[in-house]
Length: 495
Image (cartoon, rainbow, N blue to C red):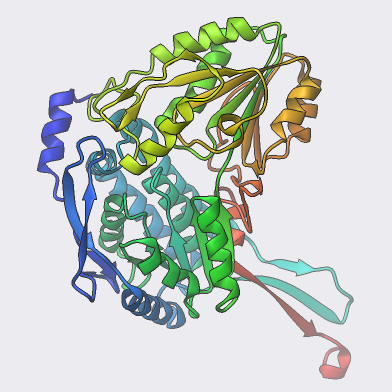
């Protein structure tokens, strides 16, 4: 592995993208306006990017529509679409270090996570969906001898993709993989805080041979670019990952325009249940640390609430405090760093406001440079108050004692969200009963995670609806289902 000096030197040598991609061309905003994208670790300007507007959205949607209607992508054979996507994944792999450095510089994510998690998972996701292209079959419906019912899948059309800032590359892959595999053309709006890697991947897509107009990227803020995408009458579907408040707005935009389909993956207040029969509390604490502190807690599926049986509560708190100390705070370009800055000063102020309150700080609680919060464990006596009710989106986890699994499950479901959950117990039957009872889209048993590329990801309640990311299920939201009913009766010349 490169040492920290090499990472910093390579970062300085990066050539950062500064143009949007529309119709296969690098382009400035039609207004000529730009905005600065910053390094959250230093506050310094990384690049000036085009500040798009509704006029840029109109232009990008028009070329995406033309590219869809003329069939340059939608009418390619599945095998040919697969070939292009596999080539894109390989080119991304060839450029993985540069992309990891860009991601770390712009998002504050640690370079170790970018290199070891985000880039491999991005590449794997694209390859998985590419390989699925020619393996998803249409169907023949059961009918009578004189009829034939065909159920065929067709690409939905032009898709608007609106990305979050916490996993820019990975969320891009989760969405463009199935959308492009289905034959759709796309208009992507990355988060204004983290646009560089999306722009670079769009450039690499052109190198991979994707036709012009198929993969378009617009940079800018929500009101000027996101809302026009949400309201555009010639976009057929929106796939959005981000906050619940913004997701509500996309539903409103759809209802007030062309009723485009909307797929939402939004917030979470994810519970973790630990019972008194677990064999290895060290392993449990390690899983909780990964779930709570990974990516500085800026993860919609992060463990935010731990409900632990009262008989092992004190022991678990001791082990969580030990785990928290192993999450080194520092410069995200240093390989040993596990906790870097939060995405922005605004977000830092919001997250740090949760450090107060009635809880007892067991570990952490310190802040650094107005950018960074160390991993923090807080014990609460009751499941009450904003720390245990609201999504924090930072490296802060709340711990509450319970007397039974039933009480823990009841608390787990006391939330407006339902994205993810974890259950730790040696009793397999009880684990499965709890997993079935928790209202969340992903429940892990004796581990923390989100499954793999073959398992769908999405939530219940206000964590989202309309479809799923990952797995074959992700392809459904980018397709229309059409029934063809064919008369085979003898009255039409049959025998």
